[in-house]
Length: 450
Ligand SMILES: O=C(O)C1=C[C@@H](OP(=O)(O)O)[C@@H](O)[C@H](O)C1
Ligand SMILES: C=C(OP(=O)(O)O)C(=O)O
Image (cartoon, rainbow, N blue to C red; front, side):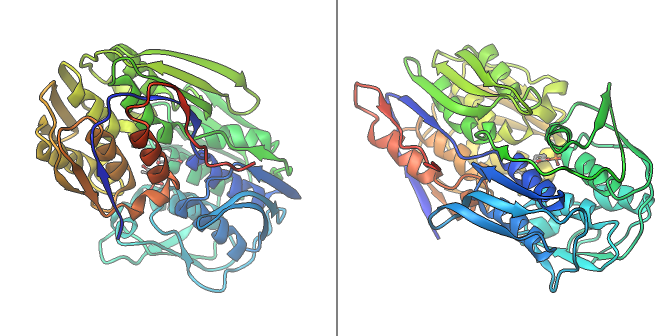
């Protein structure tokens, strides 16, 4: 099992891009496979999570050809053969690995199929709540059994069913739940609508539009008429801002640094971290250079002394995956940072409130654990420590960033999990570390997909 060994850096001058967006790669595989023709997906994220979804679509009849591959990981460019909404029964249970997004979106897709299917995942995924999708999908007429040892958890056994449209008011602000209901709604006759308690990432709606499936968003209600055939199209996946977040925090917290992240997704439902880092004192500019479908651009950030901030309730869904690394920025800032309304963190790959608090305290950070978040008293010097990722990719990467600012050596054990979202992270981390004392700018090797 691999580990990261990290020491502090004094300089960060870099320009690079991060791998493709995870949320969009899942959706491109699913909608491409449902479409009425062939779709080329460029800059697909070759992570375990997304490769599992791609293989799931293959098991349902939508095969693909790999056009370019990141060796040892998976495809970065592929051609998927859409099945015009006519999927076939999988021969065996489908492995969703570690991915909540994969399992919940596929459950929505499979809810209204005329065949039986089963979705399973690893130990972490098998302990995450699935009632949030089985309840609305059940109201649509789906028959889904949760067969896990823990009630309401995977494996999911999905029986053949015909689904009806629904007007669903989501109790949690979750893009996965919204997307599961919309994907099921594609197979229902009539109008399905989902009301969200707060704005969540809108990649499903945007990607449906790229495939010429019209949806309507009014305030917090997203509606769609079922039965529309997705028209095949090609899709270029921008870099993942949730992966960029690790380097943005490293640069923000290091006065004198300059970092440019190129070709990253700048969808406003994902960029709350930029607002937070600006409020904390980082100097930043974004240039959007393409905005068809999904805005893509460059972020330039300059490090400055940071001060604590309060994360606003409406920001939480738009930076939920970035909170572990925002907690590191908070520990490095002067003053207090309050993170509340983030109870959802407790049902991610780990309970991310507890895992962040434990690891931060082990490094000398001062943090109070709340039921729905944490209060971090920044400015206490961090020291190296022996840490566990608990098998959670975001925890492994967030604490690698903390190690760049700690005295002594920080060892993070159990880091293979980073491959669920950021293949090549270790390579980027090494490049940052080895150039730490070089005066000139350098080009961080990108994970080239060209
Ligand atoms: O829809 C998506 O692609 C995602 C939605 C979020 O989860 P929730 O929908 O549970 O908030 C996020 O944490 C996850 O990494 C990806
Ligand atoms: C929570 C995450 O993903 P998922 O829900 O897809 O497992 C994540 O990537 O941080």
